[in-house]
Length: 159
Image (cartoon, rainbow, N blue to C red):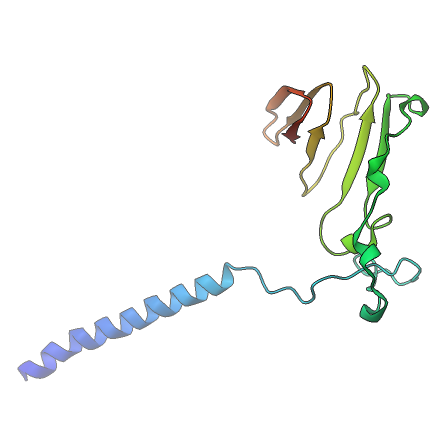
């Protein structure tokens, strides 16, 4: 009789331990990112099909040049803009290797006194690298708090 009373708490403890360990394993697997379905999906820009971006090029047609874009190397003409800003985008339209990667980039050249008009980036962030000159930047949080900073050349600013 004494042996059976002693084994019941151990049995309950072992069952409890099993459920705790199982829960931890399940939580761990639910908290990780899924493996990528593919390494890349170079955009097939000529396709008329549009499903959450561009369809993928056939892997046999992918070339190294699909992953390189040199369009950001040249300064834009700020005199053509009312706000003194010339933007050179590097999105999937210019850089097909970015398709499905969740990233894009833009080169923004500012004339003295140029203004980047207030804008939104839903579900995205912006990182600005100031090559030369001085740049006054800021952002407003969802709780309506303003953060500003004067950034000098060769520094980065996150908004």
